[in-house]
Length: 176
Image (tube, rainbow, N blue to C red; front, side, top):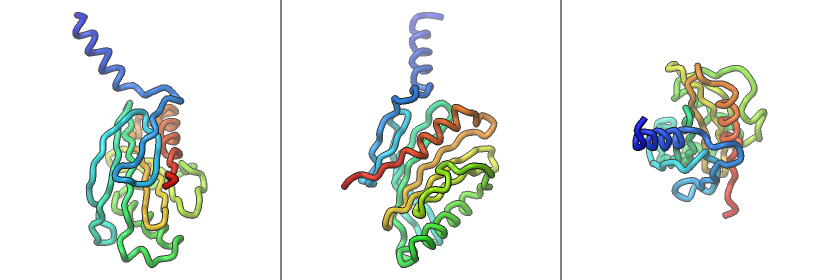
């Protein structure tokens, strides 16, 4: 292998491999989301829209892919129709609507957060394209924060589970 080819190979290998345990980066949510989380390294940001019970809802997204795992941290404000619901009902309703819209099937087994708090929902899902998705949805006042990961199910082993659960459990709300 020629020196420039070897150097390029080493750079690609270095960028494509997960950081060792303990060296992940704390990231602040895009657009003053009011929370922090861990990524294996700095990622990208984007904005979009989702449909929630017929309403267009702006979303704010941080995203990174690392060693076969896609990590996404996003948030949105609840549309007016959901704000009047009791906290528990609101959480249950949004959780069901979001998961139904994604067309995924729940996977049996322990949840990423165990039982979680009353303002949180979590689960494992399998999409028809073979992607295993881990999701944690947290409700903070009128804001919904979603951390999720995607991994091809055929490659979902101990390392992928460990890194996925680490990310899904890394949410911390900012003091401000």
